[in-house]
Image (cartoon, rainbow, N blue to C red; front, side, top):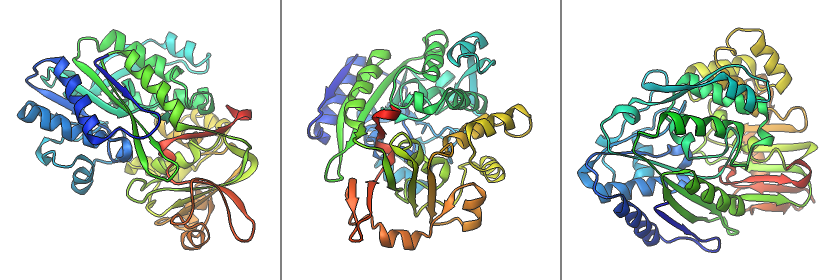
Amino acid sequence: MYYELARERGSLADEELRAGLVSALDRLGPRRRVLAVPPDITRLHSRAGRITELVWEYYGPRLADVLPATGTHLPMSDPEIASMYGAVPRSLFRVHRFRKDVETLGRVPAALIREVSEGRLDYDWPAQVNTLVARGGHDLVLSIGQVVPHEVVGMASYTKNLFIGTGGSEAIDKSHYLGAVYGMERMMGRPDTPVRRVLTYAEERFARSLPIVYVHTVVAAEADGSLALKGLFVGDDVEVFRRAAALSLRVNFTMVEEPIKKAVVYLNAAEFKSTWLGNKAIYRTRMAIADGGELVVLAPGVSRFGEDPEIDRLIRAYGYRTTPEVLRLVESGGALKENLSVAAHLIHGSSEGRFAITYCPGGLTRGEIEKANFQFGDLAGMIGRYDPRTLKDGWNELPDGERFFYISNPALGLWAHRGRF
Protein backbone atom coordinates (compact mmCIF):
# COMPACT_ATOMS: atom_id res chain seq x y z
CA MET A 1 0.00 0.00 0.00
CA TYR A 2 1.54 3.29 -1.12
CA TYR A 3 -1.30 5.62 -0.12
CA GLU A 4 -4.79 5.62 1.41
CA LEU A 5 -7.19 8.45 2.14
CA ALA A 6 -10.83 7.75 2.93
CA ARG A 7 -13.63 10.05 4.04
CA GLU A 8 -17.15 8.68 4.48
CA ARG A 9 -18.61 12.08 5.35
CA GLY A 10 -18.04 14.92 2.94
CA SER A 11 -15.79 14.78 -0.09
CA LEU A 12 -12.09 14.79 -0.84
CA ALA A 13 -11.14 18.10 -2.43
CA ASP A 14 -9.17 18.26 -5.68
CA GLU A 15 -6.11 19.47 -3.83
CA GLU A 16 -6.30 16.47 -1.50
CA LEU A 17 -6.58 14.18 -4.52
CA ARG A 18 -3.56 15.82 -6.09
CA ALA A 19 -1.49 15.69 -2.89
CA GLY A 20 -2.37 12.07 -2.24
CA LEU A 21 -1.51 10.96 -5.75
CA VAL A 22 1.78 12.88 -5.74
CA SER A 23 2.70 11.32 -2.39
CA ALA A 24 2.07 7.82 -3.79
CA LEU A 25 3.96 8.45 -7.02
CA ASP A 26 6.90 9.93 -5.10
CA ARG A 27 7.16 6.66 -3.17
CA LEU A 28 7.41 4.70 -6.42
CA GLY A 29 10.64 6.44 -7.31
CA PRO A 30 11.81 7.66 -10.73
CA ARG A 31 10.21 6.14 -13.84
CA ARG A 32 11.22 6.68 -17.43
CA ARG A 33 8.28 5.31 -19.46
CA VAL A 34 4.75 5.17 -18.00
CA LEU A 35 1.52 3.65 -19.30
CA ALA A 36 -1.79 4.83 -17.81
CA VAL A 37 -4.81 2.52 -18.13
CA PRO A 38 -7.92 4.41 -17.01
CA PRO A 39 -11.57 3.47 -17.63
CA ASP A 40 -13.48 5.00 -20.54
CA ILE A 41 -16.40 7.42 -20.68
CA THR A 42 -18.72 4.82 -19.11
CA ARG A 43 -16.92 5.63 -15.83
CA LEU A 44 -17.13 9.37 -16.36
CA HIS A 45 -17.82 10.03 -12.67
CA SER A 46 -15.00 7.85 -11.36
CA ARG A 47 -12.52 10.77 -11.15
CA ALA A 48 -10.18 8.55 -13.17
CA GLY A 49 -10.10 11.20 -15.87
CA ARG A 50 -8.84 13.80 -13.43
CA ILE A 51 -6.32 11.32 -12.01
CA THR A 52 -5.01 10.64 -15.53
CA GLU A 53 -4.57 14.37 -16.02
CA LEU A 54 -2.67 14.60 -12.72
CA VAL A 55 -0.47 11.66 -13.77
CA TRP A 56 0.37 13.54 -16.99
CA GLU A 57 1.19 16.68 -15.00
CA TYR A 58 3.46 14.65 -12.70
CA TYR A 59 5.36 12.63 -15.30
CA GLY A 60 5.27 14.99 -18.28
CA PRO A 61 6.99 13.40 -21.31
CA ARG A 62 7.61 10.22 -19.31
CA LEU A 63 3.90 9.42 -19.69
CA ALA A 64 4.26 7.61 -23.00
CA ASP A 65 0.79 6.12 -23.54
CA VAL A 66 -2.79 6.33 -22.27
CA LEU A 67 -4.87 3.24 -23.02
CA PRO A 68 -8.54 3.52 -22.00
CA ALA A 69 -9.74 0.10 -20.80
CA THR A 70 -12.70 -0.11 -23.17
CA GLY A 71 -13.15 -3.89 -23.25
CA THR A 72 -15.82 -4.43 -25.92
CA HIS A 73 -17.01 -0.80 -25.81
CA LEU A 74 -16.64 1.55 -28.74
CA PRO A 75 -13.39 3.56 -28.93
CA MET A 76 -13.68 6.96 -27.29
CA SER A 77 -14.33 9.95 -29.54
CA ASP A 78 -12.20 13.09 -29.41
CA PRO A 79 -14.95 15.05 -27.60
CA GLU A 80 -15.29 12.25 -25.03
CA ILE A 81 -11.52 12.21 -24.46
CA ALA A 82 -11.44 15.98 -24.00
CA SER A 83 -14.43 15.88 -21.66
CA MET A 84 -13.04 13.13 -19.44
CA TYR A 85 -9.26 13.63 -19.43
CA GLY A 86 -8.96 17.41 -19.60
CA ALA A 87 -5.61 18.71 -20.83
CA VAL A 88 -3.95 15.34 -21.51
CA PRO A 89 -2.66 15.54 -25.11
CA ARG A 90 -4.78 13.65 -27.63
CA SER A 91 -1.58 12.24 -29.16
CA LEU A 92 -0.99 10.05 -26.08
CA PHE A 93 -4.21 8.05 -26.43
CA ARG A 94 -4.25 4.53 -27.84
CA VAL A 95 -7.24 2.37 -28.86
CA HIS A 96 -7.78 -1.10 -27.42
CA ARG A 97 -9.02 -3.43 -30.15
CA PHE A 98 -10.23 -6.46 -28.23
CA ARG A 99 -10.20 -8.75 -31.26
CA LYS A 100 -6.63 -7.89 -32.32
CA ASP A 101 -4.38 -6.09 -29.84
CA VAL A 102 -4.04 -8.74 -27.15
CA GLU A 103 -1.42 -11.09 -25.80
CA THR A 104 -2.14 -14.24 -23.80
CA LEU A 105 0.12 -14.41 -20.74
CA GLY A 106 -1.04 -17.89 -19.72
CA ARG A 107 -4.16 -19.99 -19.24
CA VAL A 108 -6.09 -20.59 -16.04
CA PRO A 109 -6.79 -24.36 -15.91
CA ALA A 110 -10.26 -25.74 -16.48
CA ALA A 111 -10.10 -27.42 -13.07
CA LEU A 112 -10.32 -24.02 -11.38
CA ILE A 113 -13.22 -22.94 -13.59
CA ARG A 114 -15.06 -26.16 -12.71
CA GLU A 115 -14.41 -25.55 -9.03
CA VAL A 116 -15.53 -21.90 -8.87
CA SER A 117 -18.55 -22.48 -11.14
CA GLU A 118 -19.68 -25.36 -8.92
CA GLY A 119 -19.36 -27.76 -11.84
CA ARG A 120 -21.46 -25.75 -14.28
CA LEU A 121 -18.63 -24.92 -16.70
CA ASP A 122 -15.67 -26.85 -18.05
CA TYR A 123 -13.24 -24.65 -19.97
CA ASP A 124 -9.91 -22.98 -19.33
CA TRP A 125 -9.49 -19.20 -19.37
CA PRO A 126 -6.89 -17.05 -21.15
CA ALA A 127 -5.16 -14.36 -19.11
CA GLN A 128 -5.08 -11.70 -21.81
CA VAL A 129 -3.98 -8.07 -21.81
CA ASN A 130 -3.32 -5.47 -24.47
CA THR A 131 0.12 -5.81 -26.05
CA LEU A 132 1.06 -2.38 -24.69
CA VAL A 133 0.57 -3.74 -21.17
CA ALA A 134 2.45 -6.96 -21.89
CA ARG A 135 5.43 -5.64 -23.82
CA GLY A 136 5.18 -1.93 -24.41
CA GLY A 137 8.53 -1.22 -22.77
CA HIS A 138 7.00 0.60 -19.79
CA ASP A 139 8.55 0.54 -16.33
CA LEU A 140 5.24 1.54 -14.73
CA VAL A 141 1.69 0.53 -15.64
CA LEU A 142 -0.85 2.58 -13.68
CA SER A 143 -4.22 0.80 -13.64
CA ILE A 144 -6.72 3.50 -12.66
CA GLY A 145 -10.32 2.68 -11.76
CA GLN A 146 -13.36 3.07 -9.55
CA VAL A 147 -14.28 0.37 -7.05
CA VAL A 148 -18.07 0.02 -7.10
CA PRO A 149 -20.51 -2.93 -7.07
CA HIS A 150 -20.40 -4.75 -10.40
CA GLU A 151 -22.58 -7.33 -12.14
CA VAL A 152 -19.82 -9.54 -13.63
CA VAL A 153 -17.06 -9.58 -11.03
CA GLY A 154 -18.81 -8.45 -7.82
CA MET A 155 -16.80 -5.26 -7.28
CA ALA A 156 -15.27 -3.37 -10.22
CA SER A 157 -11.65 -2.35 -10.84
CA TYR A 158 -8.39 -3.97 -9.65
CA THR A 159 -7.40 -6.87 -11.96
CA LYS A 160 -10.64 -6.55 -13.94
CA ASN A 161 -9.42 -3.25 -15.38
CA LEU A 162 -6.52 -5.05 -17.11
CA PHE A 163 -7.63 -8.65 -17.76
CA ILE A 164 -11.12 -7.68 -18.97
CA GLY A 165 -10.80 -3.97 -19.77
CA THR A 166 -7.76 -4.64 -21.99
CA GLY A 167 -8.47 -8.34 -22.55
CA GLY A 168 -9.40 -10.18 -25.70
CA SER A 169 -12.64 -11.58 -26.99
CA GLU A 170 -12.16 -15.05 -25.46
CA ALA A 171 -11.26 -13.69 -22.02
CA ILE A 172 -14.19 -11.28 -21.98
CA ASP A 173 -16.63 -13.92 -23.25
CA LYS A 174 -15.67 -16.62 -20.79
CA SER A 175 -15.41 -14.38 -17.72
CA HIS A 176 -18.80 -12.79 -18.36
CA TYR A 177 -20.42 -16.16 -18.92
CA LEU A 178 -18.92 -17.57 -15.73
CA GLY A 179 -20.43 -14.71 -13.75
CA ALA A 180 -23.82 -15.04 -15.41
CA VAL A 181 -24.05 -18.82 -14.96
CA TYR A 182 -22.97 -18.59 -11.32
CA GLY A 183 -25.60 -15.90 -10.73
CA MET A 184 -25.12 -12.15 -10.66
CA GLU A 185 -27.26 -11.72 -7.57
CA ARG A 186 -24.87 -14.01 -5.71
CA MET A 187 -21.94 -11.78 -6.64
CA MET A 188 -22.85 -8.11 -6.81
CA GLY A 189 -21.36 -6.15 -3.95
CA ARG A 190 -19.00 -8.96 -2.94
CA PRO A 191 -15.23 -8.64 -3.41
CA ASP A 192 -14.62 -12.43 -3.40
CA THR A 193 -16.43 -14.09 -6.31
CA PRO A 194 -15.73 -16.84 -8.85
CA VAL A 195 -14.67 -14.34 -11.53
CA ARG A 196 -12.46 -12.47 -9.08
CA ARG A 197 -10.76 -15.72 -8.05
CA VAL A 198 -9.95 -16.47 -11.68
CA LEU A 199 -8.49 -12.98 -12.17
CA THR A 200 -6.46 -13.28 -8.97
CA TYR A 201 -5.07 -16.64 -10.08
CA ALA A 202 -4.07 -15.09 -13.40
CA GLU A 203 -2.37 -12.10 -11.81
CA GLU A 204 -0.43 -14.16 -9.28
CA ARG A 205 0.86 -16.66 -11.84
CA PHE A 206 1.19 -14.71 -15.07
CA ALA A 207 1.52 -10.98 -14.35
CA ARG A 208 3.93 -10.67 -11.42
CA SER A 209 6.74 -9.51 -13.70
CA LEU A 210 4.70 -6.57 -14.99
CA PRO A 211 5.23 -3.22 -13.17
CA ILE A 212 1.55 -2.73 -12.28
CA VAL A 213 0.36 -0.29 -9.62
CA TYR A 214 -3.37 0.16 -8.95
CA VAL A 215 -5.03 3.52 -8.31
CA HIS A 216 -8.56 3.06 -6.96
CA THR A 217 -11.23 5.65 -6.27
CA VAL A 218 -14.51 5.35 -4.42
CA VAL A 219 -17.24 7.82 -5.48
CA ALA A 220 -20.74 8.16 -4.04
CA ALA A 221 -23.86 10.21 -4.63
CA GLU A 222 -24.76 12.58 -1.80
CA ALA A 223 -28.29 13.26 -0.57
CA ASP A 224 -28.49 16.44 -2.68
CA GLY A 225 -27.56 14.54 -5.85
CA SER A 226 -23.97 15.78 -6.02
CA LEU A 227 -21.07 13.36 -6.42
CA ALA A 228 -18.40 13.02 -3.75
CA LEU A 229 -14.95 11.47 -3.94
CA LYS A 230 -14.83 9.31 -0.81
CA GLY A 231 -11.52 7.51 -1.18
CA LEU A 232 -8.18 7.22 -2.94
CA PHE A 233 -6.19 4.01 -2.62
CA VAL A 234 -2.85 3.33 -4.32
CA GLY A 235 -0.90 0.07 -4.13
CA ASP A 236 0.35 -3.00 -5.95
CA ASP A 237 -1.41 -5.86 -4.15
CA VAL A 238 -4.84 -7.17 -3.22
CA GLU A 239 -4.98 -5.27 0.08
CA VAL A 240 -5.44 -1.95 -1.69
CA PHE A 241 -8.48 -3.39 -3.48
CA ARG A 242 -9.95 -4.93 -0.34
CA ARG A 243 -9.77 -1.66 1.54
CA ALA A 244 -11.36 0.26 -1.33
CA ALA A 245 -14.09 -2.39 -1.65
CA ALA A 246 -14.88 -2.15 2.06
CA LEU A 247 -15.36 1.61 1.76
CA SER A 248 -17.44 1.22 -1.41
CA LEU A 249 -19.85 -1.13 0.33
CA ARG A 250 -20.33 1.42 3.09
CA VAL A 251 -21.08 4.33 0.73
CA ASN A 252 -22.40 2.75 -2.51
CA PHE A 253 -24.82 0.16 -1.16
CA THR A 254 -28.43 0.98 -0.22
CA MET A 255 -30.60 -1.50 1.66
CA VAL A 256 -34.23 -0.48 1.08
CA GLU A 257 -36.71 -1.10 3.85
CA GLU A 258 -39.24 -2.79 1.56
CA PRO A 259 -39.27 -4.37 -1.91
CA ILE A 260 -39.82 -1.64 -4.50
CA LYS A 261 -43.01 -2.04 -6.49
CA LYS A 262 -42.07 0.68 -8.95
CA ALA A 263 -38.59 2.00 -9.68
CA VAL A 264 -37.67 4.77 -12.12
CA VAL A 265 -34.04 5.01 -13.26
CA TYR A 266 -32.53 7.81 -15.34
CA LEU A 267 -29.62 7.19 -17.74
CA ASN A 268 -27.52 10.25 -18.58
CA ALA A 269 -27.43 10.62 -22.37
CA ALA A 270 -23.71 11.39 -22.50
CA GLU A 271 -22.85 8.26 -20.55
CA PHE A 272 -25.37 5.63 -21.71
CA LYS A 273 -25.88 5.18 -25.45
CA SER A 274 -26.67 1.44 -25.62
CA THR A 275 -28.56 -1.14 -23.61
CA TRP A 276 -25.20 -2.92 -23.24
CA LEU A 277 -24.26 -0.08 -20.89
CA GLY A 278 -27.70 1.17 -19.91
CA ASN A 279 -28.78 -2.14 -18.46
CA LYS A 280 -26.97 -1.11 -15.30
CA ALA A 281 -30.44 0.22 -14.55
CA ILE A 282 -31.51 -3.43 -14.34
CA TYR A 283 -28.39 -4.99 -12.81
CA ARG A 284 -28.03 -2.60 -9.91
CA THR A 285 -31.72 -2.46 -8.92
CA ARG A 286 -32.91 -6.02 -9.50
CA MET A 287 -32.37 -7.16 -5.91
CA ALA A 288 -34.53 -4.28 -4.65
CA ILE A 289 -37.54 -4.73 -6.97
CA ALA A 290 -40.57 -6.68 -5.80
CA ASP A 291 -41.92 -9.72 -7.60
CA GLY A 292 -44.58 -8.38 -9.96
CA GLY A 293 -43.10 -4.88 -9.79
CA GLU A 294 -41.99 -2.58 -12.61
CA LEU A 295 -38.73 -0.89 -13.56
CA VAL A 296 -39.00 2.18 -15.81
CA VAL A 297 -35.75 3.11 -17.57
CA LEU A 298 -35.56 6.69 -18.89
CA ALA A 299 -32.85 6.42 -21.56
CA PRO A 300 -32.66 9.53 -23.79
CA GLY A 301 -29.21 8.62 -25.18
CA VAL A 302 -29.87 4.95 -25.95
CA SER A 303 -29.97 4.38 -29.70
CA ARG A 304 -28.53 0.86 -30.04
CA PHE A 305 -28.23 -2.42 -28.15
CA GLY A 306 -24.53 -3.35 -28.43
CA GLU A 307 -21.41 -1.22 -28.44
CA ASP A 308 -19.94 -3.43 -31.18
CA PRO A 309 -21.86 -3.99 -34.48
CA GLU A 310 -21.71 -7.79 -34.20
CA ILE A 311 -22.79 -7.73 -30.56
CA ASP A 312 -25.62 -5.36 -31.47
CA ARG A 313 -26.78 -7.77 -34.18
CA LEU A 314 -26.83 -10.73 -31.80
CA ILE A 315 -28.78 -8.90 -29.11
CA ARG A 316 -31.35 -7.92 -31.71
CA ALA A 317 -31.53 -11.51 -32.96
CA TYR A 318 -32.06 -13.21 -29.59
CA GLY A 319 -33.41 -10.58 -27.21
CA TYR A 320 -33.11 -10.61 -23.43
CA ARG A 321 -34.10 -14.00 -22.02
CA THR A 322 -34.18 -15.95 -18.78
CA THR A 323 -31.15 -17.93 -17.63
CA PRO A 324 -32.59 -21.36 -18.55
CA GLU A 325 -33.49 -20.14 -22.04
CA VAL A 326 -30.01 -18.71 -22.67
CA LEU A 327 -28.28 -21.80 -21.32
CA ARG A 328 -30.29 -23.97 -23.73
CA LEU A 329 -29.40 -21.69 -26.65
CA VAL A 330 -25.69 -21.87 -25.78
CA GLU A 331 -25.76 -25.64 -25.34
CA SER A 332 -27.47 -26.08 -28.70
CA GLY A 333 -24.51 -24.45 -30.46
CA GLY A 334 -24.60 -21.61 -32.91
CA ALA A 335 -23.81 -17.93 -32.55
CA LEU A 336 -24.30 -17.57 -28.80
CA LYS A 337 -21.91 -20.42 -28.05
CA GLU A 338 -19.26 -18.49 -29.95
CA ASN A 339 -20.16 -15.20 -28.23
CA LEU A 340 -20.48 -16.02 -24.54
CA SER A 341 -20.28 -12.40 -23.36
CA VAL A 342 -23.44 -11.72 -25.36
CA ALA A 343 -25.09 -14.77 -23.79
CA ALA A 344 -24.13 -13.44 -20.37
CA HIS A 345 -25.47 -10.00 -21.23
CA LEU A 346 -28.83 -11.45 -22.31
CA ILE A 347 -29.13 -13.12 -18.90
CA HIS A 348 -28.10 -9.95 -17.09
CA GLY A 349 -30.75 -7.93 -18.91
CA SER A 350 -33.59 -10.28 -18.01
CA SER A 351 -35.71 -9.92 -14.90
CA GLU A 352 -36.07 -13.72 -14.98
CA GLY A 353 -39.81 -13.08 -15.26
CA ARG A 354 -39.97 -11.51 -11.78
CA PHE A 355 -40.81 -7.92 -12.76
CA ALA A 356 -41.62 -5.85 -15.84
CA ILE A 357 -38.97 -3.71 -17.55
CA THR A 358 -40.25 -0.66 -19.44
CA TYR A 359 -37.49 0.87 -21.59
CA CYS A 360 -37.95 4.45 -22.79
CA PRO A 361 -35.16 5.03 -25.35
CA GLY A 362 -34.35 8.17 -27.25
CA GLY A 363 -33.27 6.37 -30.41
CA LEU A 364 -34.90 2.92 -30.65
CA THR A 365 -38.39 2.15 -31.90
CA ARG A 366 -41.21 0.32 -30.18
CA GLY A 367 -40.66 -2.62 -32.50
CA GLU A 368 -36.97 -2.84 -31.70
CA ILE A 369 -37.53 -2.65 -27.95
CA GLU A 370 -40.36 -5.18 -27.92
CA LYS A 371 -38.41 -7.61 -30.12
CA ALA A 372 -35.69 -7.49 -27.46
CA ASN A 373 -38.35 -8.62 -24.92
CA PHE A 374 -38.71 -5.32 -23.06
CA GLN A 375 -41.87 -3.27 -22.71
CA PHE A 376 -41.72 0.00 -24.66
CA GLY A 377 -42.33 3.37 -23.04
CA ASP A 378 -42.67 6.69 -24.85
CA LEU A 379 -39.75 8.80 -23.62
CA ALA A 380 -41.45 12.19 -23.87
CA GLY A 381 -44.54 10.99 -22.09
CA MET A 382 -42.63 9.22 -19.36
CA ILE A 383 -40.32 12.18 -18.72
CA GLY A 384 -43.41 14.37 -18.60
CA ARG A 385 -44.63 12.22 -15.74
CA TYR A 386 -41.29 11.37 -14.11
CA ASP A 387 -39.27 14.56 -14.61
CA PRO A 388 -35.61 14.02 -13.59
CA ARG A 389 -35.29 17.76 -12.92
CA THR A 390 -37.81 17.61 -10.08
CA LEU A 391 -37.28 14.13 -8.62
CA LYS A 392 -35.03 13.30 -5.71
CA ASP A 393 -33.09 10.08 -5.28
CA GLY A 394 -35.12 7.67 -3.17
CA TRP A 395 -38.86 7.62 -2.57
CA ASN A 396 -41.09 10.10 -4.42
CA GLU A 397 -44.86 10.56 -4.58
CA LEU A 398 -46.79 12.18 -7.44
CA PRO A 399 -49.91 14.35 -6.91
CA ASP A 400 -52.13 11.43 -7.95
CA GLY A 401 -50.66 9.32 -5.15
CA GLU A 402 -48.31 7.10 -7.16
CA ARG A 403 -45.27 6.23 -5.04
CA PHE A 404 -42.02 5.11 -6.62
CA PHE A 405 -38.27 4.87 -5.99
CA TYR A 406 -36.05 7.09 -8.16
CA ILE A 407 -32.37 6.59 -9.02
CA SER A 408 -30.53 9.31 -10.97
CA ASN A 409 -27.41 7.26 -11.78
CA PRO A 410 -27.39 3.46 -11.39
CA ALA A 411 -23.65 3.24 -12.09
CA LEU A 412 -22.86 4.67 -8.66
CA GLY A 413 -24.45 2.06 -6.45
CA LEU A 414 -26.30 -1.14 -5.65
CA TRP A 415 -29.79 -1.40 -4.20
CA ALA A 416 -31.36 -4.41 -2.49
CA HIS A 417 -33.85 -5.49 0.14
CA ARG A 418 -32.98 -7.98 2.82
CA GLY A 419 -34.92 -10.83 1.26
CA ARG A 420 -32.63 -10.89 -1.78
CA PHE A 421 -29.16 -9.94 -0.43
